[in-house]
Image (cartoon, rainbow, N blue to C red; front, side, top):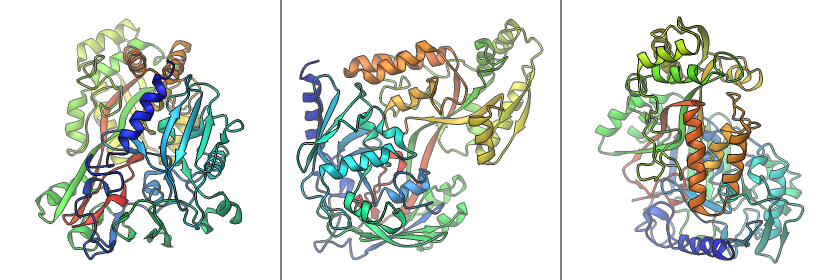
Length: 532
């Protein structure tokens, strides 16, 4: 490997400096997709300095590392706290953010990171290498410590004020993705210690916005940070998140001028928004597939023929047409095709057409009989509390009845359902989601790893564990793609899960709002927004 790895990554980092986050044109100090006219010369945005967002839920807390990681909460926190590396969607590029550049050593056991010059924290302190190492150590001690996987923080060290080295216990290429994950934020050590680690009473981040007033259950206000290190950002100086839980009411806020942006547009409001010339719809497929799976720990689901029989009995396309109201799309593969190295990609040399188990009731019956269940059996199907998944459950229960499988639908609230699935393992079949949450396919691969918390289905195979570990360590991109393809193929062959649909982000905003785009974990990058 010699010098090739860090040369390639260094070149990529430099190239990223020339790109904007959302538009792909302009310079790195611009305002992303809307660099042309993003703000007027005085730093305001077209005369309007406040953006109101109709949000589905309030944030749970202000803690960016140990607190809630629900999508609704991160959408707000990501405007106040920042990561070293920024991942943009849908291009899935990793580009400099707080880090000016990064570089692996020859054997990928050390990652040297150089910060941008002059980054100010909200408490007035300049962000340093020591601050970053302290931030990573706090993460190591948090509930979200997985972002520090394979970092040896005791051996990691600062070279100077802007440069530090993360020492690894072994090569682990997903570290770049982890450093872009919204919980992997950098902040002022001095400010944290002065506040005794009480996030509710400190503002020590580096983001384009600082905390304003929070009326719990009602609204969250953010204020543009005057000393943000990118000139002209944020173009919109004030942001207010208004909590409106009722789906239809969020769109009405935009339609009537009460809000500029609506998160999570309801499927029933799409037609009205499309017909409104003053409104634009933002649609983007997520990196999540919803899947159906089985309790591999117990009979009959520890028999691959039974799992395959169920897969053959599920009409994925028809289920989507009946249940989804035009939102999302039927699953295209084990993982969505917007994930790097997904074999659902049409141009992948390892492409596999999906569904692998095309709808075929006769084939399903044959496999059940071969497995010793010619008359089927009875089982419980945990669908959770979401109306959409309950609709899929009813559709699939009817489908499975046609091959003799009698399904009892179990619909529980979120907490009780998670307890039954993740702790008690008290289920037969269920519906859940699989995603490359941090942007790297390794995160999804780990669902098939024996000791991973996301391995709800209880699959265990030392060969698969070794394949997942080897792929994560491989620095050569082409070889890693081949190894990731093999993991997906094995999961499909053994019918570990049956992906059923891909999820979709749907928001809407006034036509005058420009530059809207998503970042990591479906968190909009509001610093790029401006009013025309």
